[in-house]
Image (cartoon, rainbow over all chains, first blue to last red; front, side, top):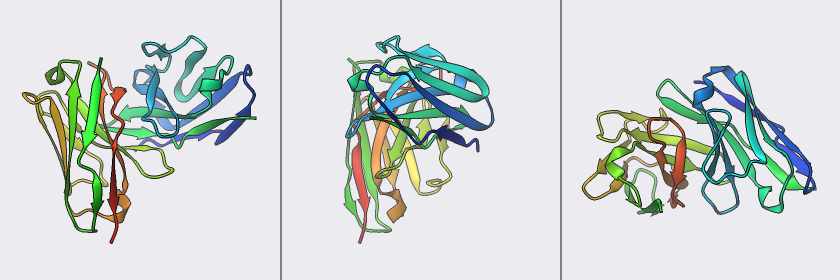
Length: 108
Length: 119
């Protein structure tokens, strides 16, 4: 099973700052099988990025994804108040899915 | 508008059973693969079980294999999860989610139903 490790665990930033979230896989992941989700308290996760770099429908262009192989990144160019949440990366492989443990982006 | 609404959660004793349902609307349910994902309190999501659009391919996470059964009724636009031999570690919010057509990510999620396994 591929393990996804996200870093940092918590990111303390101010609105307007840039957020860079990392997701590292224990073995190579196809870019087409890597996604990012946002989750706010009491809500279901929401798809942000799929195929490592494609934004889902309705997702603002301040969100971008990049990376390949074992290293993937989610970047939020300028944090808006509604972006403070937990972010998860996810991969598919071998008829199973795994999620990272999450990065919490909190207001500094 | 795509909607997924789960029901059937509740409090159950260890060793007990529960059947979850997911009512889908706003899209052609029979065209999409579906999945159950759970989230224990304070933890990240964990996939539980997958079914292809016509139920020809079904997968289970190792943690639930042999205890849980996924099924669907395309005529009723519904997805189900039969959970037997429940354990305390099965306590979680259970979400159903739609798998994007021809892809592997989850493009729509339901709000979830809470399953608590406790004596």
